[in-house]
Length: 249
Image 1 (cartoon, rainbow, N blue to C red):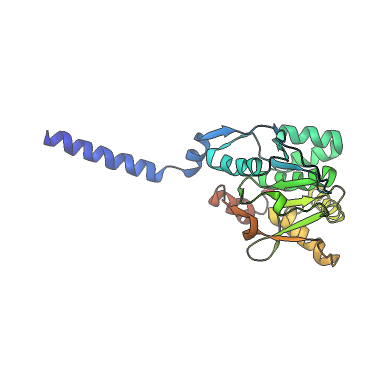
Image 2: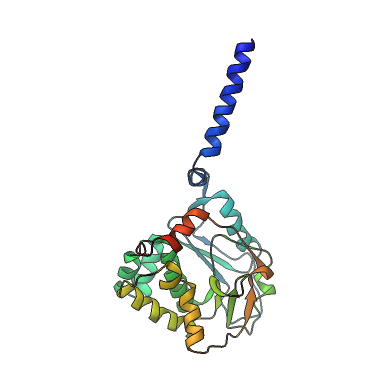
């Protein structure tokens, strides 16, 4: 009996060591749920607004971690008057082909980093249709109706460090700022510009346009006021953005 207890004790220790050393990414991938591609609004607002009541999110597929899905649900459940649209890579290609043409599909496919693909897509979808874009690791803390007013045409997001960022975009279609970002990103892709995702396709492009054009944003919202950010994979995020500048293309 004592021997059995000792064996059981060592088995439990071995199991603990295995779980402790298990790749967090594997745990993440094994615990998944499917995001619906479209969720129609549950109610209609009588007051019209310039920023369309549509929320866009993206990932390479619609299968994500259940923890991240809680973030998705925050955007859907807090905004019953908004339509929710999810785009995986296949749906993005269809959108680009239909709305922008084959050259944009070619550019999208030339990008090897998921974060940069997302950067490119969010700018193009919001420029074309307007609405709200949000990263999957952003959990909404209050309804968009408390942020977006009928007269708003552009709301820029600022991080905790007070930098402009593209975690969230809230704009009406054909935004001038996004148009300038698209031109820079297209050139960076065509030239296969070296740099991090932040520099080549990400928020530094937005910051560059704001600075060079001396652009005055129409409205600003600060991260702590409405969202909480949960990083997907801290180590992978660092790798994509910082460690390998040749990895984007």
